[in-house]
Image 1: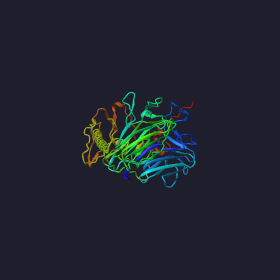
Image 2: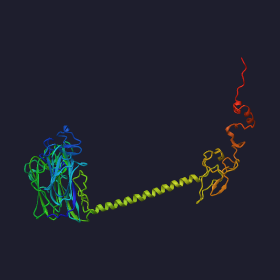
Image 3: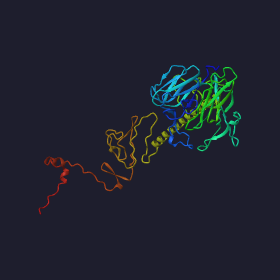
Image 4: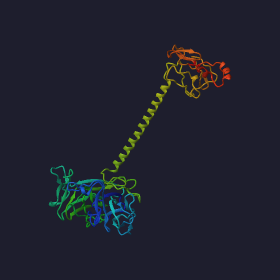
Length: 497
């Protein structure tokens, strides 16, 4: 009998997977059956040469009493779709019926913490419209201390021309190699049959689970899968062989899981037989899961109770390791180590670049400050450990002296300093030390002194403002309504004409 401490893995199913069974029928009118719909496809555009659905698929119905069933061996299930509160009910096995609370972000129902074993989830429509977009089931594969590996068994051998069937599959004359959907794609190699009751068999060993893959389309019908073993208890986790699965759908989708078996005994040998119950059936590949000794994931593959995983388009999504990959945990560890090394190196390089850039920027600023000025004979230098407010710099050699700048212009003025050409009236303060600064026009032939001001000889004749005359004050006492400036502008009386 299968051990109850198998490592849990999440298997994600779309509504197009035959593992989700719809009743009374999988596809039909929305008011008397489930109806498959794609978000990017319109029924009006469907034709024999345009059967591939685009976008996200869903099965919807307004038929009261319509229901879905999912059979699996595991411990948890999540059902996704849309529906209002009270429009559906859910039952797991023989447990109590649960009224649907309406979808929350696309999640219709979830149940975790089930005792490991075979379970059946049943969702029944009670009122209104309900749609199903997919499901996630938690299954058990491999015991503690093992990791999963996969091997793919293709139904055809494409290295021959024309392709031939893989001898692993025994289907006699009723099965043939086919390349489907070439009228609208590059083709889908598989083995197929249209013969009623035709069987296809193969053997599985050294395996803890397997998935049968194929396509859905409007020409397919029902089929069954029987998994048997001569080892006692080896099939305790295998679903009932009488369950009829249907891959029939108006819109075509390839690469879908049609059947799933988990919880197998790796030491046992299994015989698998598929029986076609009508119309067509195709098989493209079988993916076998093996559990080999290796370090267990830190979480032992278990999910946190009550946490709904996000549905994915892939058939298998593990909560602790990827069960759809043939890599062992050693490769995952190597990848993690490589990622840490690359990330650490990137951080160091970024840090070194930042330090280099900062030093370069700082040096450039220092170079600008310390660059020699041809108009200054002895530029001040900043000594380490000193504090200095730099004097105002000018861009042109004939700028006005600092004594003519207004207060607060950014220079340090000394009270009572005289204004003498060639010597600054504004001594600099360097930690209390006062020394004169040579002005840029000292000893230059380009300037001349006019009164207390300097004038550039190339600027033309100097125009001085009128000097103050004390007599203005006396005149102002006799004519208070006129200023001296106004008197100079009084027009002379014109002679009478």
